[in-house]
Image: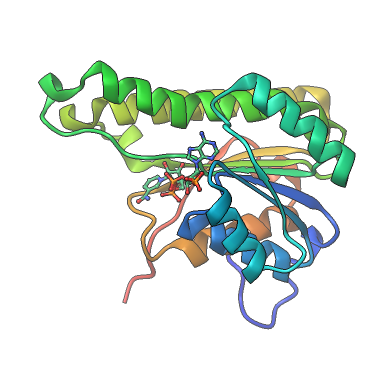
Length: 230
Ligand SMILES: NC(=O)c1ccc[n+]([C@@H]2O[C@H](COP(=O)([O-])OP(=O)(O)OC[C@H]3O[C@@H](n4cnc5c(N)ncnc54)[C@H](OP(=O)(O)O)[C@@H]3O)[C@@H](O)[C@H]2O)c1
């Protein structure tokens, strides 16, 4: 599904409205740029006005919204505002993450768990609940998250993190099951990485490519993103 220069891959997303939840990281910027270049209408959501302003400067046409995606009331207000300004969305790319861990099992403290739950799980639950009707109604709804290889091979020092990511994966598959049951052309996809650093462009191309394949072929799949082997 990876884009190749000069190919037609990516064009199917043209004209679609795609919201990036947690858009201001390097990965978020790469995804926003690739979607914009492919002709999508991109909505960037983050919690920091300055970083969102910077994205607006770099990506003309980008719509940005500041919202605390960990707060369901804020996310339902966001969904209302987005629908009023841009209509229903066709894609939700969820990128809010963050790492806490270390110190073996003894180091898996409640503070870190609360952070991981709030960022990795709550923001995903909130955004998917608020935008599920849009994705179901879209002729090409797509949801994507980025998970971690640590879900397959969790270590004691990363137990909190792996457990939060596993919860996010399970939630995403539940959303995907809802898509399949509704018989819509929508798909929920879990990208899996060891580390994102250096893979931002790969992720961005894969996100754009989600609209180039039938939903049923990717719904509820895990797609490993790995650096090219030299
Ligand atoms: N980085 C890695 O090596 C790696 C490895 C495995 C998996 N992943 C996953 O890949 C995804 C993307 O990674 P990343 O490093 O780009 O993510 P990230 O930087 O942790 O999060 C993306 C953006 O989310 C925004 N954000 C945080 N809390 C928010 C809130 N309450 N409301 C709204 N926005 C909020 C932050 O921007 P603002 O501060 O501007 O709001 C941040 O730039 C994540 O799901 C991550 O867990 C990453």
